Image (cartoon, rainbow, N blue to C red; front, side, top):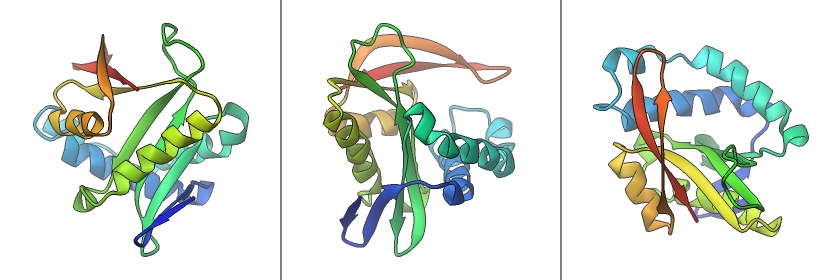
Length: 174
């Protein structure tokens, strides 16, 4: 648990599923505006994501994929989730940051950096030597965030199918 100038980072619980879903939808709509289709972003829905996040968080103990939530003044403002790497070529022991989002109105407040540090520190304490994450290539702001925190593009790319259109992601490692 991290507490830094009224910012609290704690393990997410099933009760946080709605807040995580809302942060995710609002984060996507703000961060990906201009390089994902407007209709796609406008059609994102909180309800199905809430159900999915509840299931993910409830299975956390079984699958080793912890999620953390950032709160400021008792309000959820961000989350990060991580777990075993999905790519077979990542040298073990390794972990992957699956998702990190912060409410757009709280960008550059330190919450994203604190969330990412929490995930990194968790995996380092377990002996992990390699961490990876995927980011949309066009997400220059997100890439700059990761690079400022010591992550580097490692040369791997993949096409992601969003159901009707694709975008390129690049992998970062640390």
